[in-house]
Length: 129
Image (cartoon, rainbow, N blue to C red; front, side, top):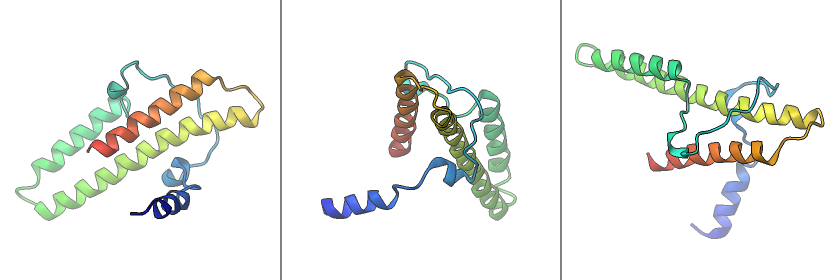
C-alpha cells in the first residue's frame, strides 16, 4: 500500500470517535480514571463487568455441543456487547475531558497523558490479538 493511500485511509477515519462508535452522547459523566503504571495490566472493564462477561462466555461455550448454531449466535452477540461497552468506556473518558474544555476548565497535561496512555495500551492490545 502506498504512503498516499495510507494517508487517505487514515484521513477517512478522522471524524470517527469512540462516542460515535458506541452510539452515546458526549455529556461528561465523571472523573478521568488513572491507569496503573504497567499499561499492559490496565483493565479494560471493571472487575464485576469482566466477571459477568466471563461467566456468560463460559455458559455459551458449554452449550456448543448441544446447540452449536445457537452458541455461535450468542457468542457473536456477547462479543458485540463487549465491544460496544468498551467503546462506551472510552467515550465516557473523552466526554469528561471535552466537558472540562467546554467549561473552559483547564485539563492538566497529566490527565491528557494518562488518557493517551490508556488509548495506546488498548490499541496495542487490539493489534496483538
